[in-house]
Length: 622
Image (tube, rainbow, N blue to C red):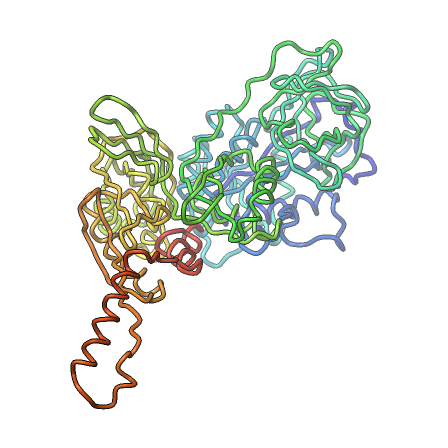
């Protein structure tokens, strides 16, 4: 019989041996959030009338797209079938499944002793399943393999149980079979979590040490910090100290998520909960920091997390220049919710003041942009995404380029670009088309393994710049949607890269500059000048639109002048009078061409920079 919240032991008084900290990891859309819903219902922490699908997904974007973006921690009471007299406390974290949010997953794993590895019984093991499994193995976690969606007509539980058993190193009979939709097998899974995942290890009487694994900004209560207590105990109204910054605060409230916030007297060894100090400054609560007591506190901090490295950079500019301070404030608040977000101010001659923002991938870019527009009411332009290059000049000077406008002029010795190791899982019939796609994207084959007779894992080294545009779309269309992709950075390589500038009436427009491979520069230049010719309104004089590499023009289009008919009033008479009027018009046009400047309308920037083949608004969903 599941325990109800009424007979749950008080946090900080709970015996650590009765606590189980675990998370659910899987590829995107394999049913993590649905399984979490069933666990919430079974343990009785959410009443039936309050229940809704994807209960832990709090953001509108998560619910609309059906993806998890933020990890959510929740405390569940459970009395196992083999020992109904003891109520165990399960601290469960529902994690994202998309490759862009791997950092969220890695932080969740560090707060747990075990993990539930979930695989769709109709689709089998996918690329992100492998990536998350390796992360769990690195953290020495107990892994419970589970097949979900066994109620589907297309499910092949026996076949995929064998695949999963080979991967984890267990017997196929040890793989649990559940249906998160109907609730079948979920009780047995919770019993197995209690039986197999070890309780937390910590020193009860030592000075308090708690690791911050997440934090959110609440406009009423300030910063809400989520922690996992490793040693000692944190109590209400105690003064605490953040070990990396040295800042001290009073604990106004401490408690657990069940799944709504529930205040308590304190948190003990192994407990997962939240702290509220009333702090409004988002920089005071850093993910990965150690919290301890101000008096007789710990001296040694816990090992933090590796800082995530942004993979893709894009410029974010407000449509209305006066919204710049609001954009800065919005990014500050989002950075607390999303520790992987990095940004710095930059200016553009064409777009004004904005920020150069680093993202973990295209979906990350898309989600952040949408959150800025929805939650803070901003109208933004995002420039085409690009990666970080390292340029070495002939005199040995190095430049780090995050923006095409920073690409140095002069004699360049070598240009280095980031490369990634990509893992593609697909049915064997698509091997040829996948290889063809990777070769055209300058890929190098590393190896191939057959997971079963009809599924193959292909590993390639690819330049990151080739992945961030439409690689995933192309992969899906060539494999009828069956392929899955995961990638991780592996360093950099030298490459023949050039900067393509766009000139309007002889003046460079920095927002349209791009760094491309030498072989693709001509195609990029031709495509962009053709698009700009249609988008920029005609002027009173002829305007050349050119694409150039350095001083060499590689493509050109001409926006024809608007011509006023000066001969309209001449209805006959001498030809010399008409010629005189035409000559006078010609002189005027020449003068105008010398002093006139081309105004690029905002719509043209939006159309070029936000079009399907430059950002990834529709392309990022993996």
